[in-house]
Length: 314
Image (cartoon, rainbow, N blue to C red; front, side, top):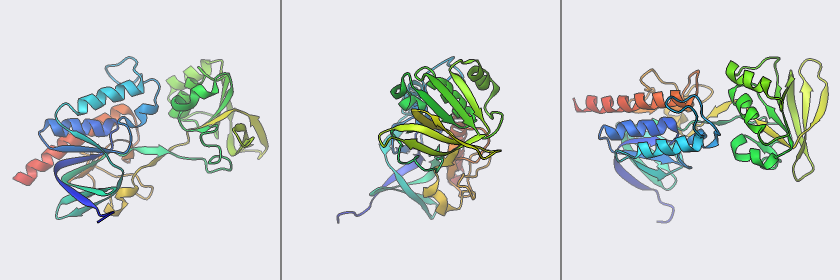
């Protein structure tokens, strides 16, 4: 019957998401001789694909995000893990078996490792959606080259805002970082680098309230002084937004494993409240979201999955 869901079985482990955490988990589970499937709705790598340079991952003084993603992908396949395209809508549990629904297909396994990551939070101001792809961006690596010789505005004060703002200076004539406070939350090494860059300036204690354009592309960012309420229009060709993350956890909320904000809660073994379901990387409720911490999560989840199988056999 057309539209009918087909069910595919026989996996020991299903990893949902192929970022650094998911690929590491797949490496560990497949190396432990567990039949592993990785479901990913895009290219393997997650946010690595949007990262120009990685300089804080052990073993590589400097490496591009896409190159590191490729190396991780190759490593995750070494011991037989399968990779398939799949946009997961939900996961249910029946008698200890996990059923992963992805499009018209469903896959079953005894273990699921969630590695879906997080997406960029939006400003939710007039003009943001209208000019997305026409000057509004959430990825400096993806879109920076379109703004060669033009002024740009970055919204945010954390690591991503400062790091990506500095990256944009290789294309832009000037980059203005707008932050609602009077000091940055980013790591000091990133702040120092930005401060020393002649093509970076800072607009303190301001928030964006609107993005304006000429119907074709962005022309101005409307900024508001958080203390005085004064509003001014800053001429800019692009607005790059880095104001936080939202966990990609909607498919799993029915499992009762997320907090009120959608972050998946785990213990140090990456175990969720549901036996046999683990979570790793940026979708987890934790303080530090980095490539190295995602890899650490993935290795622990892979080992925990193996231990889970050992306990089932006892």
